[in-house]
Image (cartoon, rainbow, N blue to C red; front, side, top):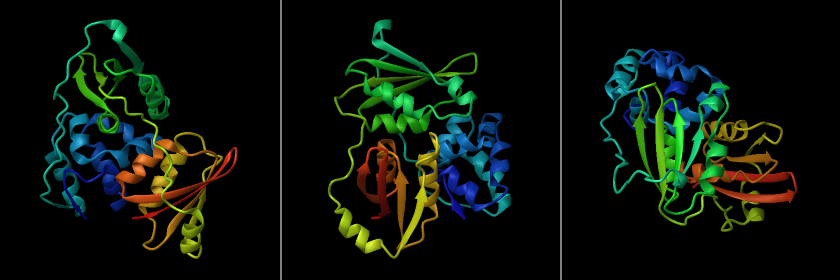
Length: 262
């Protein structure tokens, strides 16, 4: 498999049984990948370039660890983000909402849902401060698309503070698609469904289970998902991964989704 600095960690881990241990060996900060829940949550969102920043190392360290396993190195340039552009730190404490994600992560849970819920309440010109044990680059990428600017500061005691400045009135909730006709799409794929049921799973397993199934979805197939609610946080991920979807609410607590490649 050819990799470059934009290759997602999840694809690397799936490509070789020893890739996970090779990545963990690069830096102790990657020990978190041993936790299967955190791995399912973080690996699909994190590229080699992002992971290198989180681990305070370089992409070449990943290449050195992975080439003995048969990975080859491509030459795609990093998609750079300018996190400092136009950013000003808060002056008044009352302008800042603070969220410490460390206790949630220590329990092996995903803080994304709670963070996004809090971010929805932030007014333009106000700040959200996330305290974490690593630089949350996937979260930065997500919230910047929703009207925030971000800046991370490394603290002396082994943790990070990431400040998010709300600079627009854009909402974080992704509205379900209304462009697709359920009946037509159901008819188009009814002989080519891969069906899964995530309605009884606890967060964040519904989202990670859907994404894992999409990673291996055969060409020409559609993923038919039984869910208990509209997964609004998943929908932006689907757009990022070049998938379309249609949604049908059967009743309260019962939702169907059809997800297919564009």
